[in-house]
Length: 307
Image 1 (spheres, one colour):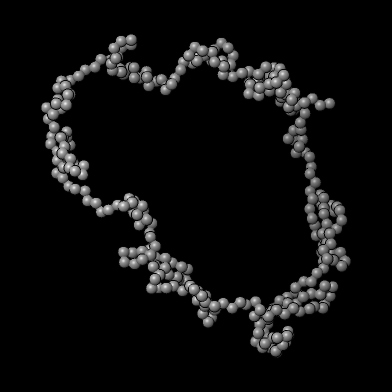
Image 2 (cartoon, one colour):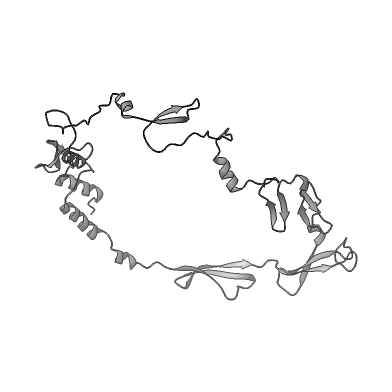
């Protein structure tokens, strides 16, 4: 049979599952007791004959496998910057006063003989000339050129380029305060002055409005002005509402009761049927309890019996 994985189960079923895991799988302590060999690569103190270096693999500190020998190669022993004292010496084309690098190279057989490699320094240097925005001095000092007549606040110092903030008389960058002020001005805004009219104390007034919609005058309202609007001259009283009777005002007690009821609330009661509740008197399933057979089928599927 098929089963629904969304159904609830019983504590006894979970106990059976725990016992199966306990009996069929290793514990944390058993796993920790398993020792994993430690492997490492070590360099032999003295290389094998004819080789530069010798390495080997170790397992728990003991050598295993074959050794790895690194063959000898040409090695740079030293490198010095020198000045040519005699033309064409020590290399063809050398000019007196030129600088060159003298590389001393060990021979491949690692004996006492050595060879030299000469590298002229002038072959490593590129010549640069100034261009738009760049100036190169006779001492090869590179600096930026600024058109001071049209700099608009741009300048350069030993610390780098600088852009001054604009003032009322000089061009430059916009400050954060000016940007905030600009953002606060509406598109197409102008310098508007609100018209002034006579001030009045707080009260109930009949007002006059000008062509621009401004209150230009006010006159205190009288009781006659109010009754002319249809408002009764005497007090009006209202009675509380009555159930199945006349409409009226909401009493304090009724308001307190109404405040205690959630919006869209319904009546919920306990049910004698397992997994159900009563909503407005109607039996409503909430959860479905799995049967013993369904739980047994699930356990057999997850933990199949092995011989």
